[in-house]
Image (cartoon, rainbow, N blue to C red; front, side, top):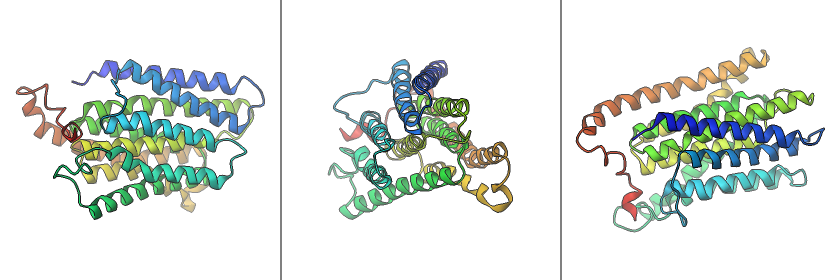
Amino acid sequence: MPEPLLYLKAMGAAAIVSAMFVLAMAGVRRPASTARINSACVLGIGLGLAVGYCVLPLRLRWPPVNGLDRFLTIVVPAALTVELIAGFQCVPCWVAWLLRMSLAATIPRILLHGSVYLSGSGNDWTLWQAGAALAVCGALSAGLWGLLSWLSQRSPGVSVPWALSLTIQCAGLTVMMAGYIKGGAAAFPLAATLVATTLGASLITKRLGRPENFVAPAILGIGVVGSFGLLFIGRFFGRLSTGCALAMLLAPLLCWATEVPLLRHRKPWFVGSIRLVLVAIPLVVVLVVAKRDFDRNMVPLLGKAPASIFCLHREDRSR
């Protein structure tokens, strides 16, 4: 069953470790380069996640046996590695984006490996259904990554990564109410470490006299991979509906609404606030719908079989 205090401890530990590491590593030598700050963010996120997941704790297995294991032991480390490589100044921009798009395209296949959808157990998709689903999901991930990166270059600021963090946090709550507690809990340290790392990077750039709206590309990339991966396993291995998953996944794109001439040249704090409010609207709607469905479908069953309600998801039946 959910343990709110434990989740708060995991979030706090992840946030503190990430922020302190970024501030310490980026401030060792001055002036710190953009590449150095980006690398500090990657390592800070990785260390914060490791600490946060140890506090929870999430019992991961190797080799991974389900979608959540593959997400945390393959997809997240791959995203950290890609962003670390992409942040080096000697790496051409096209190589960095080739690595990012390759990862985005392969995430759905990695997460569905060995599941009932692809295992040939009789409940799987046909070949064309599998190909279409993997292609659409990969395109969604790549498109979201590209559009948010473009926006971050046009109008930088902490609001875009914080919008992703808000999405991840709400996705975790929704996935939990959809019946997959362990999958939803994995969102909390990730959301906390993204907020803390963004704040740490902003403080470093401000202290060094750099533009205050600088945001390390690594934070954005890992946030996109995290939100997509969590919603994906919630949809295919939990009871999260396709509509709710899509609404939450695409909610950060509402940040683009501030690019209209009326808002684009306003003060950064005002633009950032508008972005977060716009993103929060569909997230709150989805949470309300998920809570209504939870109260209607899950609560009456809690007194009858509390130990089994939240563990009967598709990934357990795929082995």
